[in-house]
Amino acid sequence: MSRIATRTIGEAAVTVLTDGSTDFGAALFPATRPEHIDTLLERQGIEKIATNFNAVLIRNGGRTVLCDAGPRDLFGPTCGFLPQAMAEAGVTPGEVDVLFATHLHPDHIAGMITPGGQAVFPGAELVVTRAEQAFWSDENRTAALPDPIPGWAQLARAVLAAYGDRLRLIGPEDEIAPGLTAVPLAGHTPGHGGWRLSSGGAQLIHGGDIIHAPALQAIDPEIGIAFDMDMDTARKTRKRLLDELATDGALFTGGHYLRPAFHVAVRDGSGYRLERP
Image 1 (tube, rainbow, N blue to C red):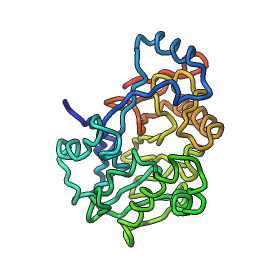
Image 2 (tube, rainbow, N blue to C red; image 1 turned 90 degrees about the vertical axis):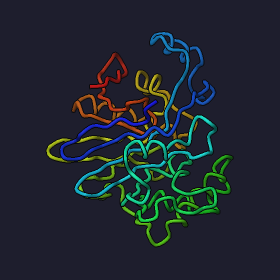
Image 3 (cartoon, rainbow, N blue to C red; image 1 turned 180 degrees about the vertical axis):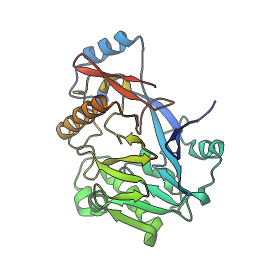
Image 4 (cartoon, helix red, strand yellow; image 1 turned 60 degrees about the horizontal axis):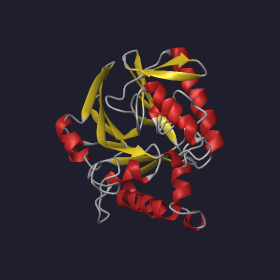
């Protein structure tokens, strides 16, 4: 089974790398009635709340950028296939010039280090927003929060330490690499964001984790997930971004869309329908 999907965006080659997949239970959507979830699934003819764990490889202007790196071995046997996906895409860890973490949750950064805490990408600069680095680096703050946040924070600090002097902190709308700019998307984590790739008059938007469950949160953007640290703000961000994407007809992707994970958003009643152009 292929674990990659590639599109040309202007002069850039963009490859979504599928690290793995899982199914969510209704309990992860605590503010939504299970009956409503069942209705949405039935309407679409599906039985499970499926999600993928995606990283994105961008080859542009002679540089290789990897955005996020999957959960490694932390989420069971259906995940941890980033190395195979990269091999299929024809890229080795040593060829990655820039790593960008949309945020420092485990399913986006565990693949950046080995189980022993060594950097997987030996020549890469790790780029993280200042707000995200500041939150997860504050042990006093994270230790006071409910599980699993303290454990996730330990992993985040291990990743930041592994890249040491190769860590570059940026503002919420700063340049990540030539042609690649951060996009702030508040609510999921304190410094959560996506990015915008602009090349040759074309663009691609990455929506970070504004959507974890495509079958639910596009058709009803009001549905929040337990992983959002500020669910109300994340809900507003999701609605705003989906409205902008539908208005502009922009091509977009994200951390948890199903393969091949390139979409446009089309208004559908009070929500949106994801279509693959």
